[in-house]
Length: 82
Image (cartoon, rainbow, N blue to C red):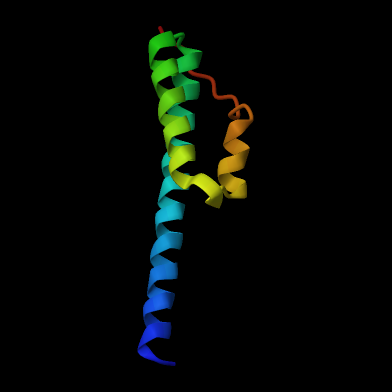
């Protein structure tokens, strides 16, 4: 294995790690969006929608199954304000 092959492997691993981080970020944003929607914070929900779309655009053509499922409704969570 030459130097070029090692560099390519490291680059591929770095790209995969970056994609994993973006998917994790998208999941956090989707969760926060669902919570904001549950407590009827319309402006926060809108801002989080924009953030989620920005992350999806950043991923671009490398859209994975994990990120694609965030396009559908987020699993329901029950958050009640007192």
